[in-house]
Image (cartoon, rainbow, N blue to C red; front, top):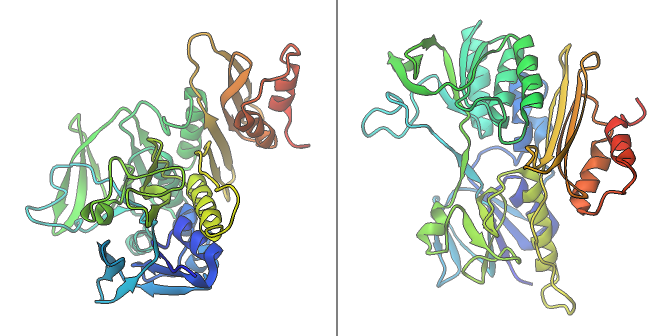
Length: 408
């Protein structure tokens, strides 16, 4: 039986190791048990304890150490603690690193650590450090830099913890990559109802450090925000250093084919670090799809029959902001902005706080956004994922999908 070594204990790596059973060796540098990174905001908000978001244990060996070098000639992973782990097949599920913006004052010359009071928001350690800072400061002033999915989640969680939150977004609206202007406005309204102050079309240019801690955030127009805690939620970049140093083909991410194989036939890559058909997804659903596809391929090795190929993932973004007097649920998929000639169907109910908008190109549903009651999202997502022609019946089936609230 081939020995499979998996580097990375995120969703993709842990799921793959669980699927492969005893033959998998899982290597991860975090001291915590593997956890669902998607739910970190709920831990920060105080809704869940860290143990609640732990992933099911894997049956094989797990090593708590950092992989520092790949010896491809010997097929060995060299680890920080001196261990050498031999493999028949190696899987890189190394995830991504937070993007740290080039802010004046963020790093002293030669420094590699963030100054006091500044946090990324990618790991359990980041989450726990933020939780301690908010608890210790009492009435904490928090500045969140970045208004994408991660920044919105962090701002909402900090506000629920009682912090005074300012969210700074360089783009013209929140979650501009996933949402159209109408649905983005509803997210904006939801955050402001929680007391979050929002600045869009606004860039941070510098931070001010006092006694080793960042106490000021300076905007591009010269306006200065006082802060106790600053969260950098500016996106993520595939973690490819290990692969690049080993001579694998790396572009935006680690390049893989339809069998999720890298330029070395004995090494695969999945999840946030992988680039398939020009795309780096950086999301949970594609990571799990890739893990399942690779598990099927590896368990089928040596058998006859067709090999499963990974052909890509059509991504639906889901965000649920519960546990408030005014909860918010939203879903977005496909192309939410129409091209010339596209048809747009939109329904809004201010009383119920719902918003539904879909984009139709010819006879195909190409994208949509739903905010509020999401009972019909499954049917709409199926129509989009199947890429089948919509019934030609004066739009009645589409209107039925839009108005279906799942029986509520």
